[in-house]
Length: 292
Image 1: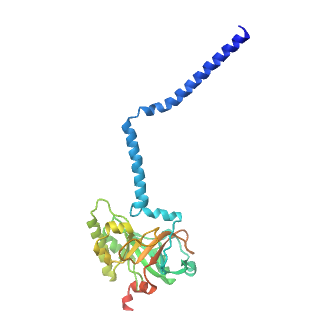
Image 2: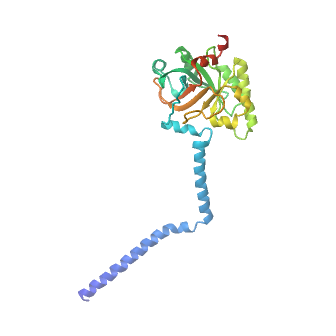
Image 3: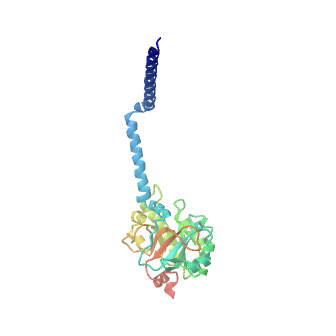
C-alpha cells in the first residue's frame, strides 16, 4: 500500500470514528430526555398546577393572612409612626434578662422616653412565662406603667384560661387593664362559637378587675373574626406593620408597629408600640384611675 493510500485510509477511519462519536453523543443526550417524553401529558399539567398552588399559598401566607406579615420586620423593615409621643414595648422571656437600669436611663424611641411596658404573663391554661414575675416587678420598680397579657390558646377552654391568668397575675392600681392576645382562629370552629369563648374570658377577667380588658390582635384578624359590635366596647391594641398610619377605621388605643425595635438594655429585637393619646390619657386608662 502506497503512502497516499495509507493516508487516505486513515482519514476515512478518523472521519468514520468522529461521526460515530457525534452520533453516540447525540444519542446520549437524546436518551436523557427520552424517559421524559413518555410521561403522560396530564402529569405535566398536574405538576404545573402544584407549582402554581405553592406560589399562591406562599403569597397568601406572607402577605395576606392575618399573621403572615410579621416575617418582614425581622429583616429590618421597621417603621416609626410620626405624630405620636407616648411609646412603649411588650416583652417576654424571648428578650432574655433585661438590664433595667440601662433601659430606664437610655431608652428613647423617636427621641421620646419609654412610658409603658406590657409583659407576657400566661399562655393557655397551664403555662407561665418564666420571666414574668421578675419583669413585672422590675417594670414598676423602674417607674414604667406596666401591664400583663395572656396569650390565647385554642387547646384550652376560655374559662380555664381566664382563671389561670387570674391565679398568676395580680394587677394593682396604676397598672394597665389586663390584655388578651389572640392570634389564631381554631380550625373547624364556627366564628360565633369562637367569639363566645373570647367573651367568656373577657367577662371573667372584667368581673375581677372591674375594667374592660384590652384586646390585642392583628388588623386583618380583627376584621375577619372579631368584628362583632360587642368587641368595640373593649380597648383595642392593634398589630399593624409597614404602614404610615393605621388603616383600621374603628377606635384603637395601642398600635404595635414593628417587632424589629432595638433598645439599650435589651438584647435582640423587641416590639415597639405607641399609645393613641396623651400621657394623661394613658394614666387615666390604668386600674384605679377613676378614684384619683
